[in-house]
Length: 250
Image (cartoon, rainbow, N blue to C red; front, side):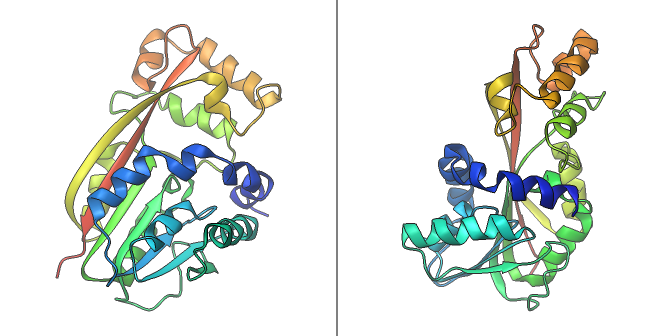
C-alpha cells in the first residue's frame, strides 16, 4: 500500500468530521468563482470525503466524483447519502488517469488535494482531456509562500503527513497550468493562522511526528521561519491557500 492510501485509509473518518473541509470559506469562494449551473456536467477529482462534490450537486445537474482511496470514498458515499445527495456517481480512480470520457465535463474541481499528487502535470493534462472546450477548472490547494526559499513548509508537512508530496508556489501552478494548455482566468490567495497543535490535526500532537516537526523548527533560522509563514516563537503557522480558475480554450 502506498503512503497516500495508507494515510487516508487510517484518517478517513477524521477528514469526514472536519468542519474546515465540510464548510471552509475556500469552498464558498470556489463555487462563487466557478458559477456552476444546473445544465452543467461536473467532476470533482480527489474528492476525499465528498464535501466539494456535494456542494457541486447543489448546483449542477450531474456530478461525478473520483478518489484513489476506497475508505475515503466509503465516507463520501455515507456523507452524501446522509445529506440527501444520492445522485453523485462516486468512482475509485487515479486523477492522472481516470478512464473517463474525453470532452465530457463543463466544470472540474480539485480541492485541498493536489499537494498529494506525484505528477501535477499529468493531472492537469487529464483535466484538459476530460473538459469540454470552454470548460473550467477550479483548484484549491495549500501553497508555499513565494518567500519560502528553504522549502521548510514542505519539509515539515512531509513529517506530519507521509502522503504529502509537495505544495507549490502560485507562480509554479500558473506555469504548470499554462504548459498544459489552460488559459488562466484568476488566482486568489488566502491566509489562515493556526496554532501548531491545530495545524497537526488529524495527526496526534503526542506522537513522534510532532516531536520531529518541533526539532526541525528549532533548527530553522529566523529567515526560514518567516519565509514559510511560521512565527518566530514557532507556535503558529500562517497557512496559505490558492484558488486557481482556468479555462480550456474553445
